Image (cartoon, rainbow, N blue to C red; front, side, top):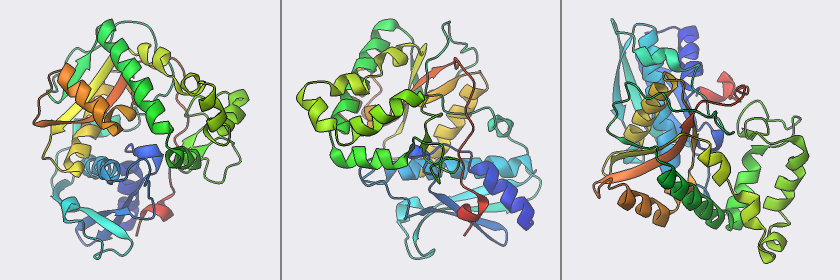
Length: 325
């Protein structure tokens, strides 16, 4: 059994895992030699994630991060995946994700040291050929040629615009944006202005454009200019299409997703997810077909990969008091 201090250290490390809108839905509690992990049902994203798959992926990444944090302490971990049981009763106000049973004499996983290196880069990437020596994952199709990257960039812009035409989605996205430094959750969760790489002078335009001015911009055909990202997408030398078995649990896919990101971090590559390409079913189907990924596979995420062109921004993370049940 680990001590309270050790448990808090594990949780703090595990919560460095990525999550949708940086919402950090995973919660932890210690029961003897078992760590229970659940999704806080109050962290709801009904517009962006109506079926809860992204929360499952986010919590899966948190499960794998917990396993890695324990391995760094020399502890083994055996995971029982509970996500597909959709249990909302064992832990009131939460959906059970997994139980992690701890054991002695574990071997430290080499990826555990990559936590501090991994971060989401939402700006342009440096020019240059990607350093992919040693990349061996068979669940990630890497797109390097200019023509296919441009096709994906344009597909992403079209899919993003279609999704943003949903007023509920825009309202929800704005609720997770921390556009001013005095926002009470600026350093805690959500998408800060710094993380989004938004200059202060465009903050008002974003707030108005995604808010009350959207119908006017739409009327005059200006919304595409407001949302387009093709130029910054093309700055990434690699676009990565991460896919898993179609029958695999969201939690298991999330565990593999974190490991993929940490492996990329070891090569100096940072990622920026293009979630619209998987949120839009038609766009995802086009990608699977064009890249011959196979009908038995599910496209989980498409990401820009490259070396960041600037300094990383501070991570916004919930305090331990919000993470432990």
